Figure 1 (cartoon, one colour):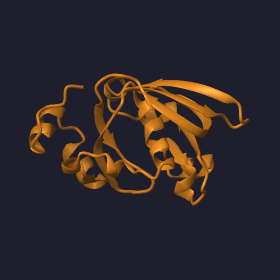
Figure 2 (cartoon, one colour):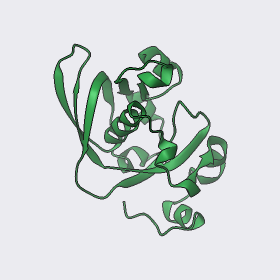
Figure 3 (cartoon, rainbow, N blue to C red):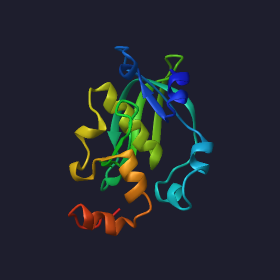
Figure 4 (cartoon, rainbow, N blue to C red):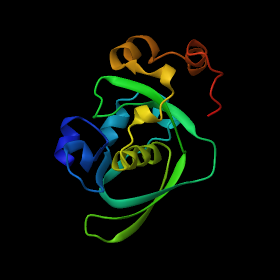
Length: 164
């Protein structure tokens, strides 16, 4: 599964995305991906490198707090992106690749990745949670919205600027 995720390239892949009826996902957020971001974006997203690991039979508990909104994409819907509200921090109880129980506490982008992949295990895609007016082709996003200040983008889609 890691090879499929790397070839995409992506930061997570759930077994159902490749036709496997398992409650299993692989995750890795490489420093190389973060280094290619625009200055300030990694800090804004609380994004840090995450070592490769497997989660099996995960149970997720969002930590209290207001959701944060960022653009997401998905290997299941290539070429599109949308803003998705997600919990800033989560706790995940699961098994690792050796069937040992582990608890993961994640914050920022890592928490978002976990929520996204666990959604796949429950039959949910990011488009089920997105702010529908933010849905865009990747091409449109890159050419029009990528470098737009957040406040201007919120006004363009008819919302008040997000408080995150």
